[in-house]
Structure formats: structure tokens, C-alpha cells
Amino acid sequence: MQRHYGLDWLRIGAFAILILYHIGMVFVPWPFHAKLDAQPWVAVPMMLSNPWRLSLLFVVSGYASRALFVRHATAWTFVRNRTARLLIPLAFGVAVIVPPQAWVELVTQHGYQRGFAAFWWGDYFRFRRLDGIALPTWNHLWFVGYLWVYTLGWTLVLVMTPAAVRRVAQGAFDRLFGGIGALLLPMAWLMLVSGVLFPGARETHELWGDWVAHASYFPMLVFGYALAGSEATLAAFARWWKPTALLALFAYGVVAAVAIVYAGYRVTPRPFGTIFSLARGVEGWMAIAALIGVAETFWNRDHRWRPMLTEAVFPFYIAHQTIIVVVAYWLMPLALPDAASFAILVAATLAGCSVFYLVGRRVPLLRPLIGLRLHRRAPAIPDDRPAIV
Image 1 (tube, helix red, strand yellow):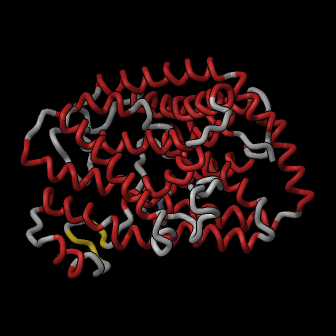
Image 2 (cartoon, rainbow, N blue to C red):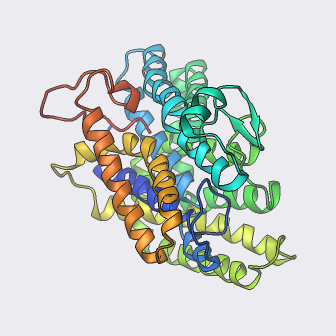
Image 3 (spheres, rainbow, N blue to C red):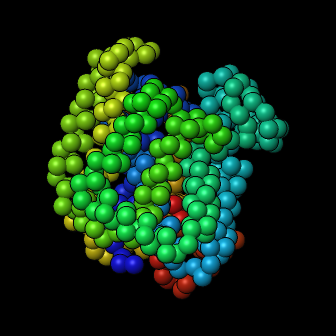
């Protein structure tokens, strides 16, 4: 399988956008674990990435899974590797990394009185709801749990499908998505999910019953897996990146306009609620198509920083939201201007995630806990395999 460095850079960029998005959640009126001075206008720029940021992560994760799948001798060794690389850091994250988020939310939004140590030792592992918050919780690490479930489900499909049928299916994918179908068919599916099947529905991230998320993200992972074997589809994205970028921006304009006009409404009135949902579907796929096209056209080259950045994205992902929430909690009594708080959050998150990664990668026992291989290939060279997410 040909190596496309542009998708590596896109994976790195996707996680960088995710971190900035979660910093934005501190300032937007939407629910979050820690809130500073919420400003309604912040929701408008947040919607520039809201419809596609998670779908893109599942596409690039499916793409990376294909590269890893073909390197393993059997499906079992692939599943064993994925389970270790996903569930070990997930368990560590739920037990150690995420608890400060739940404690800050309880203290600042529900009047919880106990200190963090008493909360972590006495309340967090009781497996019950506390003021409506299920404990223990995975918060932002839901993505890792969903990715593991989707990976196992898709691997089961691959194992049950004869090799000849898989080749035919890949050929059918190339024909369907080797041209304009790469743009229209996934867009139509996201419009169907957002505007028809689950209009106005919100993801729960509780796995069971989260059908709107499963209908959106599992097909994205499968698409990314098939994309890794389709040069024709990658070429289509590269060929059409300009019109897809324009369509994404136009759809964002519609989304933003409806959000601004009906900002004070609990439910957007018809037909504008439907228009909003359908426009999200258009933006959701056109932005992904444009980004893949840009990555293929302009970023398809290696760099000496790429292996380390590729390795670092998962540790950064594990740590970033807890750092954001804790630093926001410390900033609350200071009442700083929003610009200053934002700058501090960006700097603190970058610094904290860097320390988390750089220290963790050098300690053998910590490496599996932060999503890295137990042993590095060589002392001075980071793991160059695709990131597990």
C-alpha cells in the first residue's frame, strides 16, 4: 500500500483542531465540565469545525487501521494489538486522568463540597450517578472506546468475508467513490443522518443507544479503511478540493446564519431547523473532502518532525481535556479578560501535554498507559507506525 504522508499530517492537524475546540468549550454557552465567561458569539466560530471534526478523526483512524491490519500476520494479532493500544490507556485515563474533570464539574456546577482526594477515593468508583453525572466516566475518552468497538466489529466483518469478496468490494468502492461519488454519496448519508433519521438528536457518548453517533461515525471508519486502498478516491479528493472547500464554506454560512438568527431559541423553528441540520451534513462532508484533497495536494511529503508528531497525538489527546478543565478551574477566581484566559489555556495545554508525552515516552512502564508501544525501536527514534487513533 502506497504511503500518503498527507494523511499523517491531516491526522496531526485533526487532533490539534480538537484541542482548540475543547478550549473553546470553556467559553461557549454549551454544557462543559468547566466554564469561564460564556459568550454566545463564540458558538459561531465553533461551528466552523463542529460538524466534521469527529467524523474526520474516524476517517483517518480507519485509514491508519488499514495500514496496521496489513502488517499483522493474522486478524487475531491485529485485534490483540488494537486492544492493548486502546483499552490500556482508556482504563488508565478513566481511572487517573479523567477524575479531575468530574470533580471540577461537581464543585463548580453542583455545589459538591468534598476535596479531590476524598472524591477520587470515596465517590468516583462507586458506579452510580452523583448529581446526574455517571461515575466513573470516560468523558472525552469516549472516542477511544467507540474506536475499539468499531475496530472489533469491522475486523469481524473482514474475517467472515473471503479474500475474493473483499477484493471485489474494494473494486466496487473504487468505482463508486473514484469520482464525483466520493463527494456526493458520503454527503448524502450525513444529510440523511442529520436531517432525516435523527433531526435535532444529540450524541450521548454512552455507547449503548447512541445511534446518531454510530450512524455517523462507524461508516466514517469503514470509509477510511477502504480509502487506504483506493488511489482513485484519493485522486478524486485532490482533484476536487477547491469546489468542496467552497461548498463547505457556503454550508457553514447557512449554519452560522441560522445559529445567529435563532440564538435565543431552545428549538429552532421549522423549516429552519431542518435547513440547519441538512447544511451541517453538507459542511460535514465537504470540509472533510476538501481537507483530504489539500493534504494530498500540498502535504504529501515527509519531514523529520512527522514521526514524533504522529506518535505524540494520542498522548496529547489523553491528557489535553483534563489540563484544560483544571487550568480553567484555577482561572475562575481571577476573572481575567477572555483573551488572556484563552491564551493561558492554549499555552498551558500545549506545555502540559508536551510534558505528559515527553516524560511518558521515556519511562517504559508508562508507555502503554499513554498509548505507546512498550519498547521503542531505537532510543533516539520515535515509533513511526501510524498513530493508533
